[in-house]
Length: 267
Image (cartoon, rainbow, N blue to C red; front, side, top):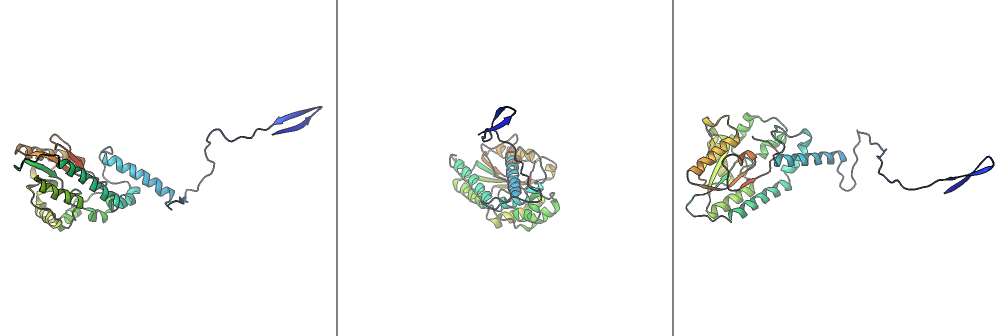
């Protein structure tokens, strides 16, 4: 577009060019911090969506063991963890890990002499303590050993159904089952009662922490006990647990399977 402006005796031509921006400039529109923007597609507040993205990434670092040693879930992730642990995604992931374990077990040529072994952790592996954690902030509260022991004594933790399915399939395939838990020897009776109540039976040995195991890191304690199993002549083809400390160490299974758990961390 051109415009003519008279300047003295001579006309001055001013050319005004109209074009769209060639770069992306920051928006000058500001949103009041006390108001939330609601996305019209699903009605989820933008702030909540941002928290969910953060919490999903945090959970990823937990499962990959990149989060290191942590004691409580982030406060803003309580709702996220609650929805995850009580929802379909957690169950689907449990099923997926169980399916992978079954597929691996079927590749093992079980000898039939009872020496082909599989090791299971118990808490959040065979038995679910979600009812306890639902009453204690879904992992947002500092762990209280006394109240958890009271829960254990009730022997009411339900089975994790995909793990129960795997457990029974392994027995049908001829594997010898060992249960290796960080629970104390004083909890043996309640643990056995709970396992049987939940549908588990016919394990070879239930291994708990004894008096000489107090103070040991879980990874050390469990490595020592797996080594004892191997020294007794068993081949550990599979190890199944919800903590990295259930699986790593100087004595490991031929293959290990990690279940998801954003509720707590055990070193």
